[in-house]
Image (cartoon, rainbow, N blue to C red):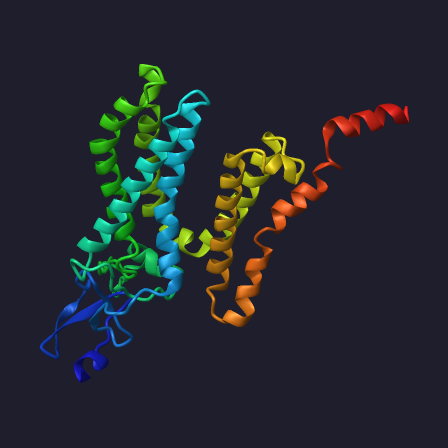
Length: 307
C-alpha cells in the first residue's frame, strides 16, 4: 500500500490492480466491475444500489413500455379490441426482459446487483477525463465508474428488442384481426425506431438523465394529464368517472406523480417526505375545479355579451 501512496496515479479514474493484497502493474484502466479508490487502487464494486439508483433504473425500464403502450393505442384506434391484449404483451415483454437482465448481471442468477456509488456527473463520462501526465501522451482510463448503471440499461433494451421481435409479430397477427394488414405491425415498426433512439439517449445522456429524471417525470406527467383531460373534455367528476379508461389514465398519472416525488425526496426523512404524496391528486383536482372558468365557448359568449 505504501507503493500506491508514494506514486499515485494521475487523473480521476486511473488506478493500479491489486493482486493477493499487493498492488501491481502500472497505472491504467480498472477491470470491469471495479473502480479506482481514493488511493488510486482498483477496488471491486460490492455495494448494493441505493433507492435512487433503483428508481433511475425503473425510469429507464419504463420508457420503452410507455412508448409501446402509446403507439399501440395510437395505431389500434377505437375499432380494435386487441389493444388491451397488445398492452399486456408489451408489459410481459418488458417484465421478462427486466428479470433476465438482473439474472445475467453479477451476481449471476440472482435478482440483485452489486454496484459502485455515483459520486458526481463525471462518473458517467470517464472518457472525457483521460489524463495526459506529460501533456503529450494520454493515459486511457475510460471505464464504467457507475457500474452497472450504464450498461445494464443497454442490455435491458437489447432483451426487450429481441423478445418483441420473437413474440409480438406472431401474436399480433392472430389477435389484431380488426386492423388492416398494413396497420397491424405499425406499433412494432415504431419500436424499431424508438429503441435505437433510447439507446443513443442512454449512451450519450445517461448521466444527465440520472440527475434529471425525477423532474422529467413530474413535468411530463403533469403536461400529458392536462392534455388528456382537455382533449377528453373532462370538466367535472361526472365526466371523469363516465369511462373506465379515463380512470385508468388518471391513476396511471398519479402513480407517475408519486414516482417523481419519491425520486426527488429519496425518502431520506420519512416523516417529512411521505406527507408530500398527498400532493399527488392536486393537479387533477385543480384542473377540474378551474376547467369551467377557462372553457373557450364560455369566454367567447361572455365576450359577445359584453359587446
